[in-house]
Length: 120
Image (tube, rainbow, N blue to C red; front, top):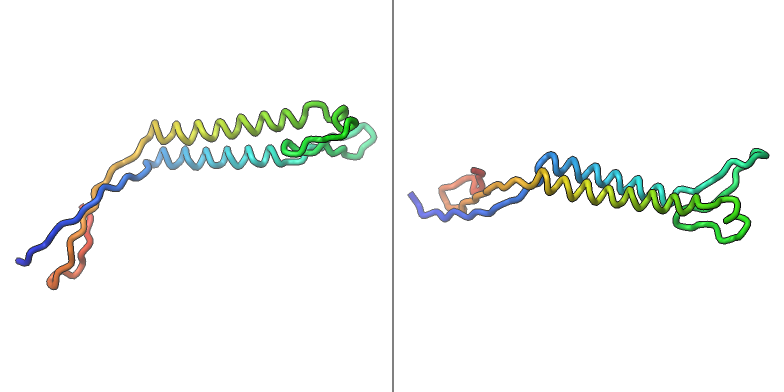
């Protein structure tokens, strides 16, 4: 038989639970971004909607501030908590469910070998 060298490497792969937590964390982050850029509108007693800006762009006029109160601050706090929850869920999922380790080996191709790559 001819001389063959075996080359290998260790591959770390996220477990299913860790991947699910990362996806859930990403969804929470998207919800937090939506919450901070979503326009805030108040239904007035006469019927038309009153625009109060958003969490990113709160009202600057004193009249708007009086009508809207602390609604933009509430949006900012909710977005912050959602972003924090996203980080905790994603990092916690990776810590709890962890990584799985797999060894991959490859042979150096020789004249006799047809397929130089195989897994063990």
